Amino acid sequence: MEVQRFLRLYLANQKRIFGFIVSMVPNWTDADDILQEATEVMWRKFSGFKAGTNFSAWGIMIARLQVLRHYRNCSSSHIRFDSEAMELLAADQSGVFDQIDERVSALEDCMKKLTDKQRYLIKMRYDKAVSVKEIAEIVNKPSYTVYKLLSRIHESLMFCIRHKLRMEEIQ
Picture 1 (cartoon, rainbow, N blue to C red):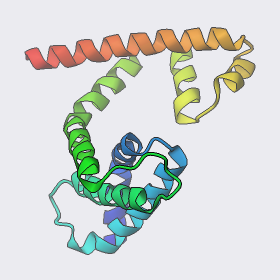
Picture 2: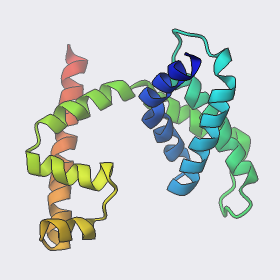
Picture 3: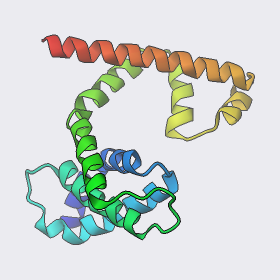
Picture 4: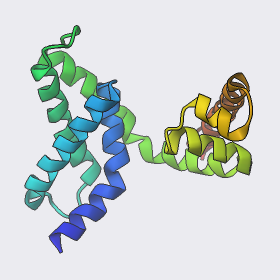
Protein backbone atom coordinates (compact mmCIF):
# COMPACT_ATOMS: atom_id res chain seq x y z
CA MET A 1 0.00 0.00 0.00
CA GLU A 2 2.80 2.41 0.94
CA VAL A 3 4.65 1.58 -2.29
CA GLN A 4 1.57 2.35 -4.39
CA ARG A 5 1.00 5.66 -2.60
CA PHE A 6 4.63 6.68 -3.11
CA LEU A 7 4.59 5.70 -6.78
CA ARG A 8 1.34 7.55 -7.45
CA LEU A 9 2.67 10.76 -5.86
CA TYR A 10 6.13 10.40 -7.36
CA LEU A 11 4.93 9.77 -10.91
CA ALA A 12 2.54 12.73 -10.72
CA ASN A 13 5.43 15.02 -9.69
CA GLN A 14 8.50 13.48 -11.34
CA LYS A 15 8.67 15.95 -14.25
CA ARG A 16 8.39 18.93 -11.94
CA ILE A 17 11.18 17.63 -9.70
CA PHE A 18 13.35 16.83 -12.71
CA GLY A 19 12.63 20.29 -14.11
CA PHE A 20 13.96 21.82 -10.92
CA ILE A 21 17.10 19.68 -11.08
CA VAL A 22 17.74 20.56 -14.74
CA SER A 23 17.34 24.25 -13.92
CA MET A 24 20.17 23.86 -11.40
CA VAL A 25 22.34 21.32 -13.26
CA PRO A 26 22.43 21.91 -17.02
CA ASN A 27 24.07 18.56 -17.82
CA TRP A 28 21.21 16.11 -18.50
CA THR A 29 23.24 13.04 -17.54
CA ASP A 30 24.16 14.57 -14.18
CA ALA A 31 20.57 15.76 -13.70
CA ASP A 32 19.28 12.24 -14.37
CA ASP A 33 21.75 10.79 -11.85
CA ILE A 34 20.69 13.38 -9.27
CA LEU A 35 17.03 12.53 -9.88
CA GLN A 36 17.77 8.86 -9.24
CA GLU A 37 19.63 9.69 -6.03
CA ALA A 38 16.85 12.04 -4.90
CA THR A 39 14.25 9.37 -5.65
CA GLU A 40 16.11 6.89 -3.46
CA VAL A 41 16.21 9.43 -0.63
CA MET A 42 12.51 10.23 -1.10
CA TRP A 43 11.63 6.55 -0.85
CA ARG A 44 13.79 6.06 2.28
CA LYS A 45 12.21 9.12 3.93
CA PHE A 46 8.67 8.59 2.63
CA SER A 47 7.42 7.35 6.00
CA GLY A 48 8.07 10.89 7.28
CA PHE A 49 6.06 12.52 4.49
CA LYS A 50 2.79 13.93 5.79
CA ALA A 51 -0.26 12.97 3.73
CA GLY A 52 -2.07 15.97 2.32
CA THR A 53 1.04 18.13 2.09
CA ASN A 54 2.76 19.16 -1.12
CA PHE A 55 4.74 16.17 -2.41
CA SER A 56 6.30 18.25 -5.17
CA ALA A 57 7.70 20.82 -2.72
CA TRP A 58 8.96 18.00 -0.49
CA GLY A 59 10.62 16.26 -3.44
CA ILE A 60 12.18 19.51 -4.67
CA MET A 61 13.58 20.16 -1.19
CA ILE A 62 15.25 16.74 -1.26
CA ALA A 63 16.42 17.30 -4.85
CA ARG A 64 17.92 20.66 -3.82
CA LEU A 65 20.03 18.92 -1.19
CA GLN A 66 21.15 16.35 -3.78
CA VAL A 67 22.11 19.16 -6.19
CA LEU A 68 24.16 20.86 -3.46
CA ARG A 69 25.84 17.56 -2.69
CA HIS A 70 26.54 17.05 -6.41
CA TYR A 71 28.30 20.41 -6.69
CA ARG A 72 30.30 19.78 -3.50
CA ASN A 73 31.47 16.41 -4.84
CA CYS A 74 32.01 17.50 -8.42
CA SER A 75 35.75 18.00 -8.65
CA SER A 76 35.78 18.23 -12.46
CA SER A 77 33.52 21.28 -12.55
CA HIS A 78 35.23 24.48 -13.65
CA ILE A 79 32.54 26.54 -12.01
CA ARG A 80 32.32 26.46 -8.25
CA PHE A 81 29.49 27.91 -6.20
CA ASP A 82 29.56 28.11 -2.46
CA SER A 83 26.57 26.79 -0.52
CA GLU A 84 25.13 30.27 -0.03
CA ALA A 85 25.16 30.98 -3.78
CA MET A 86 23.53 27.62 -4.50
CA GLU A 87 20.81 28.32 -1.92
CA LEU A 88 20.13 31.71 -3.55
CA LEU A 89 19.83 30.05 -6.97
CA ALA A 90 17.58 27.34 -5.60
CA ALA A 91 15.36 29.88 -3.82
CA ASP A 92 15.07 31.85 -7.05
CA GLN A 93 14.04 28.71 -8.94
CA SER A 94 11.47 27.83 -6.27
CA GLY A 95 9.53 30.98 -7.14
CA VAL A 96 9.18 29.74 -10.69
CA PHE A 97 7.91 26.37 -9.53
CA ASP A 98 5.15 28.00 -7.50
CA GLN A 99 3.54 28.94 -10.84
CA ILE A 100 4.32 25.73 -12.70
CA ASP A 101 0.81 24.24 -12.55
CA GLU A 102 -0.67 27.27 -14.31
CA ARG A 103 2.05 27.18 -16.95
CA VAL A 104 1.68 23.45 -17.57
CA SER A 105 -2.07 23.84 -17.87
CA ALA A 106 -1.62 26.68 -20.36
CA LEU A 107 0.86 24.60 -22.37
CA GLU A 108 -1.54 21.64 -22.48
CA ASP A 109 -4.37 23.88 -23.69
CA CYS A 110 -2.13 25.48 -26.31
CA MET A 111 -0.86 22.09 -27.50
CA LYS A 112 -4.47 21.14 -28.24
CA LYS A 113 -4.69 24.10 -30.62
CA LEU A 114 -1.79 22.83 -32.75
CA THR A 115 -2.42 20.82 -35.87
CA ASP A 116 -1.80 17.06 -35.76
CA LYS A 117 1.39 17.57 -37.81
CA GLN A 118 2.67 20.24 -35.40
CA ARG A 119 1.92 18.10 -32.34
CA TYR A 120 3.66 15.15 -34.00
CA LEU A 121 6.83 17.20 -34.55
CA ILE A 122 6.82 18.55 -30.98
CA LYS A 123 6.24 15.11 -29.47
CA MET A 124 9.01 13.60 -31.59
CA ARG A 125 11.44 16.32 -30.61
CA TYR A 126 10.68 16.60 -26.90
CA ASP A 127 8.77 13.54 -25.68
CA LYS A 128 10.92 11.08 -27.61
CA ALA A 129 14.10 13.25 -27.75
CA VAL A 130 14.55 12.64 -31.48
CA SER A 131 17.17 14.90 -33.06
CA VAL A 132 16.19 17.41 -35.73
CA LYS A 133 18.30 15.51 -38.24
CA GLU A 134 16.44 12.26 -37.48
CA ILE A 135 13.06 14.02 -37.66
CA ALA A 136 14.06 15.44 -41.05
CA GLU A 137 14.78 11.93 -42.29
CA ILE A 138 11.49 10.61 -40.91
CA VAL A 139 9.35 13.35 -42.47
CA ASN A 140 11.50 13.47 -45.62
CA LYS A 141 12.32 17.18 -45.36
CA PRO A 142 15.62 19.07 -45.10
CA SER A 143 16.88 19.75 -41.57
CA TYR A 144 16.64 23.52 -42.02
CA THR A 145 12.94 23.13 -42.87
CA VAL A 146 12.36 21.14 -39.69
CA TYR A 147 14.24 23.81 -37.68
CA LYS A 148 12.00 26.50 -39.19
CA LEU A 149 8.84 24.48 -38.51
CA LEU A 150 9.86 23.88 -34.88
CA SER A 151 10.75 27.55 -34.48
CA ARG A 152 7.32 28.63 -35.74
CA ILE A 153 5.62 26.12 -33.45
CA HIS A 154 7.64 27.43 -30.48
CA GLU A 155 6.64 31.01 -31.30
CA SER A 156 3.01 29.98 -31.61
CA LEU A 157 3.09 28.12 -28.29
CA MET A 158 4.84 31.00 -26.50
CA PHE A 159 2.31 33.51 -27.82
CA CYS A 160 -0.58 31.27 -26.82
CA ILE A 161 0.81 30.54 -23.34
CA ARG A 162 1.56 34.20 -22.62
CA HIS A 163 -1.89 35.21 -23.81
CA LYS A 164 -3.57 32.52 -21.71
CA LEU A 165 -1.60 33.47 -18.57
CA ARG A 166 -2.39 37.18 -19.07
CA MET A 167 -6.08 36.36 -19.45
CA GLU A 168 -6.01 34.31 -16.22
CA GLU A 169 -4.35 37.25 -14.39
CA ILE A 170 -7.14 39.57 -15.51
CA GLN A 171 -9.89 37.26 -14.22
